[in-house]
Length: 126
Image (cartoon, rainbow, N blue to C red):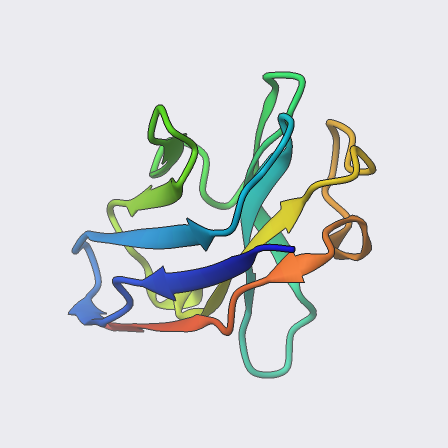
């Protein structure tokens, strides 16, 4: 059992940058996939960036070249560096983890991730 807690959400102007952090509490015995999802009003949950346990990385087309996902060496913190933010990036951002090896590289399915943080709001004004 682990607990995920996001931080770093804020309100910024378009073109600005933010870095989200996700702290992992609890002991993890093996490699696992972690990533960021987001949901904005009237839209379905979207996988934004994923670090798969096999080493692959996924980015949604809408964030490629602007967002970077990373993890510290101890795998206790996941980051999402967001640059050149657009109003369309405004959403509640969620950190998620798959400890059971279900998530596979490709378009991420949130149902494959069984641990979720409470979410962190990102607001981008034009």
